[in-house]
Length: 191
Length: 289
Image 1 (tube, chains in turn red, orange):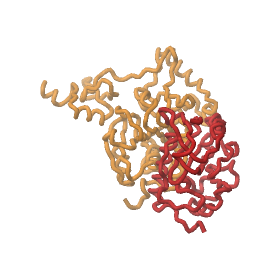
Image 2 (cartoon, rainbow over the protein chains, first blue to last red):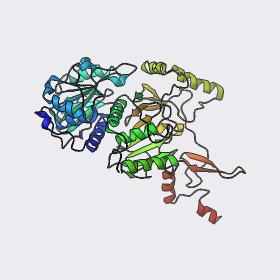
Image 3 (cartoon, rainbow over the protein chains, first blue to last red):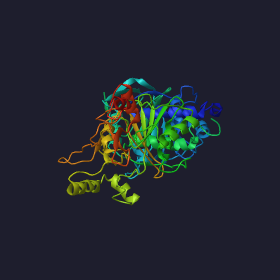
Image 4 (spheres, rainbow over the protein chains, first blue to last red):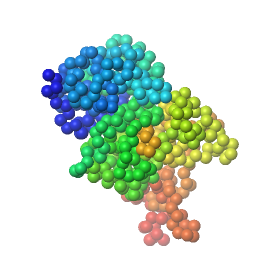
């Protein structure tokens, strides 16, 4: 089934370029970058979602696969070399196509805030849809991120996560072969 | 390039460092532990910086490496050659042309731009290490943002010397939350970190810590309202290019008290000399005299 589909054609160079897109996106909240353009992952994963996971997840990182992404489980297990974890609260990475309650994910501890989860959320589209205003480190001036697929109460839900700083979940949004990131430091308001 | 993976490190190590880097960017100034690898050079020669650079570097990057501002010292030359060999990347000494700059103890004089990445080599990532030897304790102090001890340390300097007597590795507050060691850059360079358009990454190999400052992030040197932070530099112009605003090194030239002050940033100095700037020790000046 989904195992027939290949991973990165060039694992070294493709992971590096996807990482740089991710690093750039995380450093400049709301910036849209291309990743995994040549990837053809199994449904329901989009190219960027798959690229992020192939780049960051391996046997040393715990991945929780949301129920809506279960069809891609075999492909992720094989290409990432990871044993998915059933408990989202214990996961380093959570992949989903619907926004889970941030409280169900690990937000790290005050002494080790880096142990929090990174949520890889696949949305319908980046660059069209609802506009969100982002501010915080990485942005000289507030930026606008336009997304289709975030719930209407996203700003309120994110505010709870943001208030936990230095704890908190970091968010990577993926759609098609594009990604954007919202680190825990960013504030989000409706634009 | 045979016998090695691209940029020396294996892919599993790179993934581990990349995960640490992303968390470091998301928590500006917070030290993220990582599994530092043994590198083909000793601790203290930039193993942390090299590992960060190796995890970030791509085939289309242009790498510049400086050591105390200089492109031509042993450390800078050998690290530049290391990546030219193991990654086949283009290298440069031109600050403007570089996409990644690995540095030991200086920030280039030319302001860095959006899109560049500066990687600092860090010997001691813990700013509180000289005040509190226990790692468990400093971790708790960071968790509670309990930085009173550092203010007391600065205050003691003021009572004893009349000013804060820290000339390098001057502690900074990042994003108004985490106290951070800026690595042993001169305090002269601290203001350049504030709202820098480039991404700043820090790697401490022996101490196994990675931390970061995203672009356009507040980085404030610790001070007091009545004793504001001030930068100092040797009160001499560069002997080669005449710069009065660049950080200069003191070079002993003979055993009769002779001194030469030259820009520590060699690229900056060369650029200025190419543009026609001269100093008191410029060769053509000597000929004229």
